[in-house]
Amino acid sequence: MVAVVVLVTGRSVTAAVRVLVELLMAAGLLGLSFGMSWAQIATAAVVVAVRKLVVSAIGAAETARTGHSGS
Image (cartoon, rainbow, N blue to C red; front, side, top):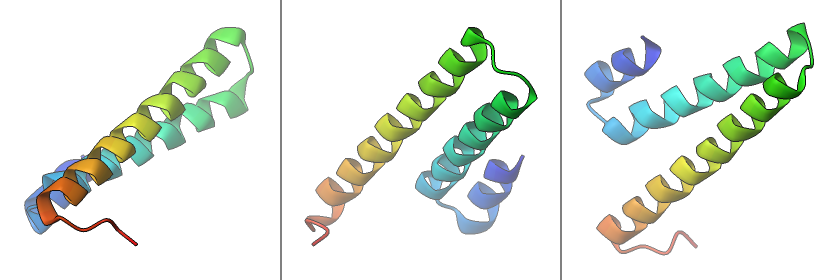
């Protein structure tokens, strides 16, 4: 829901996706605090890996679109 609000108010898909990914990571890490089974640890690891991939892809897309190297 928060990502939808960011999308509607900011009209930025990139910002909305970043918010969504961060919230999913927070939820995965919060799930670890309730109990640490191997399945929960694996789920949290997958969420972190997906977050890294999405953030990297968004950064690469922004760099390609703007032509700036970010440094």
